Image 1 (cartoon, rainbow, N blue to C red):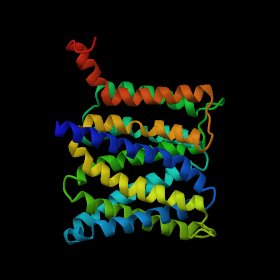
Image 2 (cartoon, helix red, strand yellow; image 1 turned 90 degrees about the vertical axis):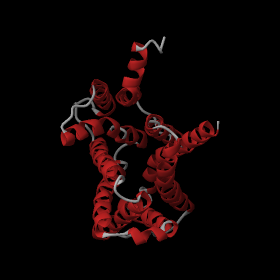
Image 3 (cartoon, one colour; image 1 turned 180 degrees about the horizontal axis):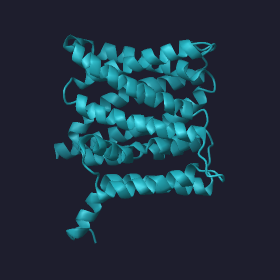
Image 4 (cartoon, rainbow, N blue to C red; image 1 turned 30 degrees about the vertical axis):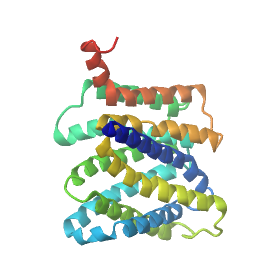
Length: 299
């Protein structure tokens, strides 16, 4: 009974992570209308880095050149993911960027296949096909071209996929809390350098209430809280349930895009988002559904 109770609590906490991640799309979109993109990322991740360093400072005794090297590589991939995603939000709706970013769920199996030379399952292939149809419905305009923002969001999904594969490898070798602290700090440094190189200012000219709210949500809840919960709670639930819970991120992005930003899509856009979401579910859980049907467990 206690194990079941812990599993339910873990599932709820993991679901809360997807809520914070989903909410950040529209929150960040509105924030970068107030201040430069990389200046915003810089402040967001420096707050998170400092908090992580305070929380896990005792673990720095495990720091060596190997974890520093691999943590830096992770940080670079994570920076590129956030950079393309955040710039994409300048050109596309938060709900659209949320769904296109979620394509990493179907990209990862094929990218892994390229690296380990093993073809993805038929369900992953079906999922990718559905996702591509969904992207076409959501993103292609009448001239059959894709917008700049949508293109950047898809590139973001590719970098997220690389980050996921690298994290799977490195998290088995090192302390995950120290690895997280290093990569978040690298994102902070790269964001600051980019902002100083290309943007008119780093610190906001006026720190209004919305920016304070945005920094609190994105740095504390969507970064520090999310990473800690994901790392600690997965031991109490199953990987399958965790993956299913995380597919709710693009859905929550769409919900918050409507509630906060009053964003609406065309009928084709809504149809595309549904097809993408179906593709994510088939890629992740098709084998479970059909194996149960074959065993007579699903009527």
